[in-house]
Amino acid sequence: MHVVATAGHVDHGKSTLVRALTGMEPDRWAEERRRGMTIDLGFAWTTLPSGAQLSFVDVPGHQRFIANMLAGIGPAAAVLFVVAADEGWCRQSEEHLAAVDALDVQHGLLAVTRSDLADPAPALAEARARIATSSLGEIDAVTVSGQTGQGIEQLRDALDHLVAGLPAPDAGARVRLWIDRSFTVRGAGTVVTGTLAAGSVACGAELELRGTSVIVRGLQVMTAEQDRVDAVARVALNLRGLPRADVGRGDALLTPRSWHLTSAIDVRVDNAARLPAELMLHVGTAAVPVRVRPLGELLVRLTLAQALPLQAGDRAVLRDPGRQTVAAGVLVLDADPPPLTRRGAARTRAADLRTATGHPDALTEIERRGAVRRDHLERLGVPLDRLDEVHQVGGWLIAAQTWDSWLARAPQLVDDWAERNPLDPAVPIPVLQRELGLPPDPPVAAAVVEAAGLRSVNGRVSRPGVVADLDRGAAGVRTLVERLRAEPFAAPERYELDALRLGPRELAAAHKAGVLLRISADIVLLPDAPEQALTRLRTLPQPFTASAARQALGTTRRVVIPLLEHLDEQGSTERIDGGARRIRP
Image (cartoon, rainbow, N blue to C red):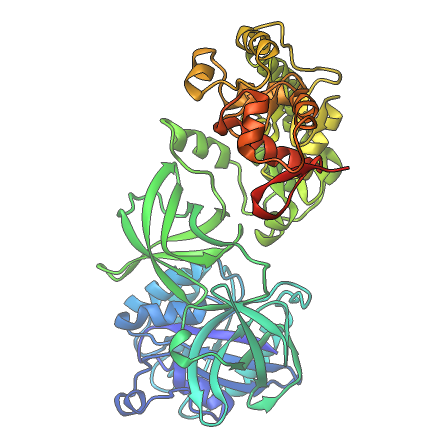
């Protein structure tokens, strides 16, 4: 199937022409038929002489409904541009052409209608001249009358020629189905429609809507039930368990976990005029308010009021709703831009984007970020080629320059840490990750440690063979050791440890080095204190109380209780009835 959108001034016969080609009524609302004017999008289809199936998205021509028109043209690959012979080129003809040009639509056909009411030659000549200056360029033209049927068969042939030249869709691509209509069917539930421009959809398939999983319960094309549909097609999907109020025009059904939802994009605009600070962005069938921040010549950053699934290369329209005019066409250059937080960041960013084409290069994207997950680039639609020039660790892609910098800086970071912390010379891995700017993913840190010739033990990184230097910068430890040798069970109070400048980190390092033994947060003894305690406790009548143990060890209850619990944990003592203990055989 092929999908073509109409375009042209209000009351120039777009819907009449679609009706003559398809035999179907594209105007869905009674108000539209009463007023003889399309208000919302209409849909109809036909079979061309070649047998090709063609669906029309009929758009309103009135200025007040330009947003609806953009929703119809946005997902279409081709347009049928309609100009009336008796009125010629009009205001909305120009506005619709500006929208078509902004979206860079390159396939189209001109139909000059009402050729039975006026000589079509002047309108044909002017329309061709104006259209030739747009993205459509030189296109075929047909003069017709929707009322008399004159030229309809020639129009069918011209449409056949048009769709034969459309680019082949990629049925294996990710799905991004912009929804243009949603409604409820009794007994079936919520149904949505849209143009499937790429990929495929099948009954029972899982899709994603604003981060929520939905299941395709039923699938129709031209009212016929289908098990599977490949692009391009106009489709109607029955979505299981989705309330009608939760979905509408502008939403997009996506291949799960395959698109990046972004609220900021860097774009190139096709209008050098100064843009207002706030505009409306039209992309697909969505219309989202945006804030505009100029970066450089024809380069701006757009901050979206609502996150959308966008990628580099997407075309969109910036519209001024106050003036009801197209402000600029937009080419998305980056759907995951860096923050602009430093002075001069906008100028630097403009320089980076000056040569961007909307076709991102994997190596450039990786080098800009330093390191990025493979699946993130896939969600951004970046082709993953030239990866032989980058380092791959797990799911991470790391630029060669970044990798080399990590390997050069890691040993120096470890040495600096050991110099500042002689009692604790091993850097905690989170510190290494933060200081080097590593991704917070253990396999990356492990790969850097190994490649840099370092050692990682229990989540800490050091030079091989490096141990705590208790003779340098550890006078407090030496003082404490000497004191405990004289009084093995006289554990110092917290204020005494503070006076010796022994905080938790210093005590942990001394414990790890086997110089001190921490039996609780603030109880520190010598490593042989448990064995000395057992020697004295064996002299007591068995079982013994905590009070008897305190007297035998010559210490306080503050020390003896944690010490006895430590001996219990070691299996050297055991508790018996009444809270007494005994030495285990």
